[in-house]
Length: 142
Length: 103
Image 1 (cartoon, each protein chain N blue to C red):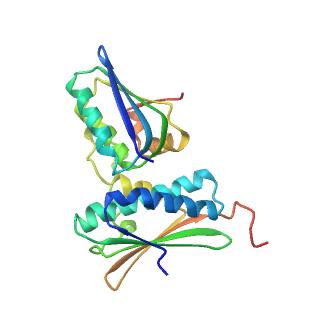
Image 2: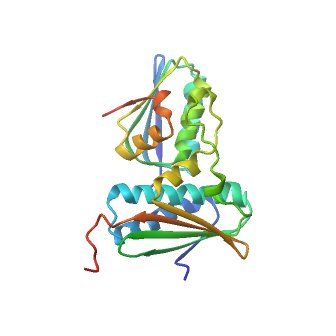
């Protein structure tokens, strides 16, 4: 079940962030892990809006879940096929800023922020699964 | 939380204060103040980040823009960034081109 639907627009990022951070609290993530999860969701959603939909109308769909070890967010869009994990654009980390191309940083930051990431393309939808480990916390089911 | 950006220029130094969250939606305001500093021909840019609670890659792109617009001879300092913001800057390898200073 989709828990949140937002227009594919930069104006949606703030509501998306509030939703992710509230989920992080429910999952018992410490602030550092919550920040990483929010950053990853923000970057991948931004990428879908700017480079997937490219100004066309569309939506972002978000679902959340958790088990004893992990908390996860599923982010779905209807933009053209794009697998951030496979594309991994070179962020040119070794270049001084004066020579850096502007681009590729968002996906790099998102993927290194997460403990696991999977992308699937099904029925015209891109689906990203963003996973953060929570097993450093006491298991609430015990 | 929206981003509030203020800029002040004293002599050849500009100081940009960032308060709130810097993402793709709010970055243009930061970008504009960098343009102002570059237009003023400053020799030093200090970005006060004590109250910057979040920064996405859009903020990094603004730092790239600042370095490319101001040139290599202008010192760019990010002052007082909270740990996750400083970590993002380091993970992108930007700490070689801008100076990170603790509060």
